[in-house]
Image 1 (cartoon, helix red, strand yellow):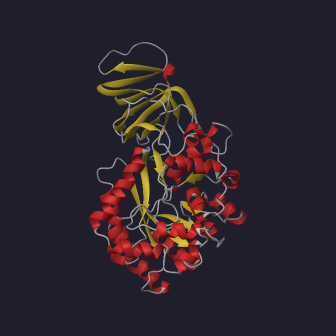
Image 2 (cartoon, protein in one colour; image 1 turned 60 degrees about the horizontal axis):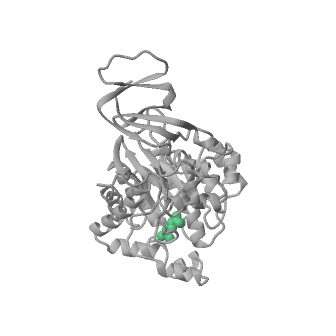
Image 3 (cartoon, protein in one colour; image 1 turned 45 degrees about the vertical axis):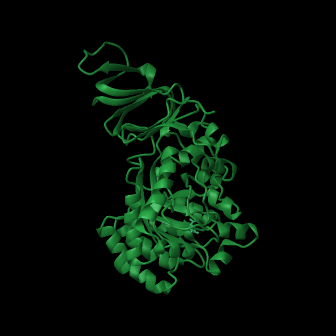
Length: 434
Ligand code: NIG
């Protein structure tokens, strides 16, 4: 084995290698009193301390049982003190680059107006399109960086971020570039997604916009390597299944990972479309029925549930058990955006996954790690603590996974390793949750 440059010792290590639909702590793949050895940017070894022998670089091999780990002379050693150690968290669905505020719509909804009624009256996505188009680059970047920073503080080491608030060829390309700019200096990988079909641009017919996306925007986003994924909002009042299909197929053919805002407000066949086109994920799914679930199970499409958005809209949230029962992995997304979901707390998302979407704490944790990485088709590089994957690791201020959703709206990460480097270290504060 290559020399370890960083060791996390005596952790309660949740490798996330169990099955998500296993009972109790099954999804966690727990290693009690475990060690995570990191070499450079990658995980080199994960296993029980008792089965491991550490040898300082250049020291003679000591006889004995177990796996020998050679440790670099200047290696960083961290004692996790029995606390929960997980992979870096993955945010699979966000719209965190935007300008403006729609608190007025929140108040209107509380007074009885629906999301659709507000959009029809000129609010909704196009209201944010106007403020985002008008905003200066530096203001968009600073605001997005602050939001990304809060995610990183919570232990998120990979975050998907969608465009979709410019709705013009140059504007959408600008947003994709600004998403990367916003990530500079934040210890979190961003995964940009082109969400050109988010709403029909106010100055154009839907048909004209779809054509511009297919002929110009998508090819340029691909050739300039600005996007990892392609997404669309399949819904009455947004885009129909045929329009979404053409854009998803073109994007996936060009090498992007497909995602679809599916069946959020009505069961419009979105889940089945995401499955048929080979999307990595179908997201929302509040209104998906058994046909859509069966199609997703067959295609291996991940369900990204966004329970905080359903809560904020006062809609019935999608339920995880029917998906899990059918064998569909269920990820949880924060869906940070100015319209349907403005809360920024990973522990609150875990709580919503449990209380609103019917997951166990272990399933919810799987939903923000292994399943979320798979939704982005990044499961070969992150989402689990296994040899060869990126060394993105979080030590939490508790040993109990249930504490995270139970003690929600407080972030519990105490130490974060991103690509093999310690990027957050609160060891001077107690390692336990207060
Ligand atoms: O995922 N539903 C579409 N997109 C966002 C909402 C965007 C907005 O209202 O600004 C969502 O909930």
